[in-house]
Amino acid sequence: QVAIPALVLQDRFAEAARLEAWRGHHDRAAKLYERAGDMRGAASVYMSLGDYEMAALNFKEGGLLEEAANAFLKAKRPETAVALLEDANQLERALEVCTQIGDQARAATLLEKMGRVADGARILAERAQATGHFTVAATQWEAAQEPLKASAAWVQTGEHLRAGLLAL
Image (cartoon, rainbow, N blue to C red; front, side, top):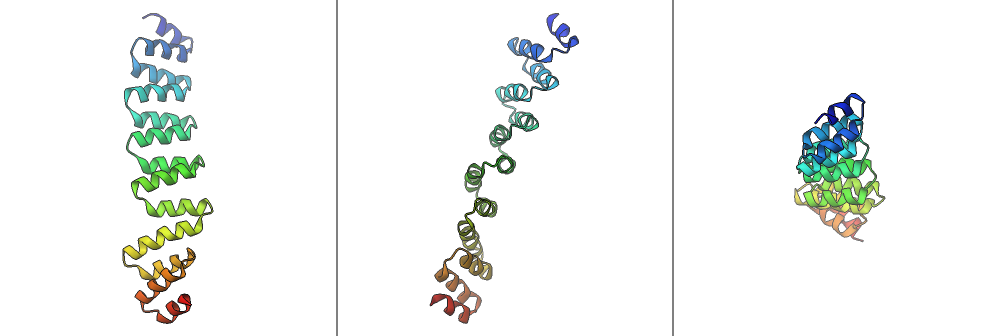
């Protein structure tokens, strides 16, 4: 018991944290890892405790964005995870999460960032059409290089001439 205060007095926080963890005092271990600046160590302790939110915050503070995103997913905060994955340039993984949670607008933005503009436009066109926004749908179908679908959407808006020109 005397060893930990002595280590803390000597600013040997990481060693004190390991000793606290070994003794099963995980909360104290996490705080000591934080004082030592070992954000990965602190986050690992929080992960083992099931405190995914605190783990994510420590990973993020330590610049470990992918690990932070994974912890935020475990904490049931997918929107935050997507933002971190995007910051970490893990666009495919961010797109996968957007698809899982049904965030079509964010998925379309990610697709455009990835240079897949037509795929993003398709998502937006389908969404607009499903909600009765046919002008937006038609414009997005055109951007997606889907002239027949754009034509059908223009018919819904009453733009028969424009629809006819696309159908040629």
